[in-house]
Image (cartoon, rainbow, N blue to C red):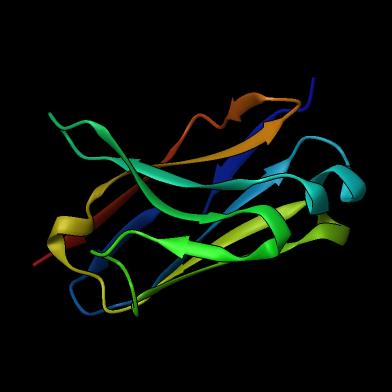
Length: 118
């Protein structure tokens, strides 16, 4: 079964930018291009919430709290998905998890921590 590995998290000041990546453990460009995938985040003591997703047909959707600041994209040839985060706020601090839905099963990465200092 394919695994997903996030990278790119770290510490950034409020107003700054950060990009996180989610790479499949093996090259699966045809699977990557066909399936829904996206990002969730979980702040300390809170539930895991959807941040952004690429859904059927390649269209994207975003949580209201990140619209206009975050951009989700993917490179099928590299079997990698990205989340570009701009104008970061302290409330964006969380562990960011990527997922991909394959055959009705949601595969999750282990997460990468993003910390935004005020």
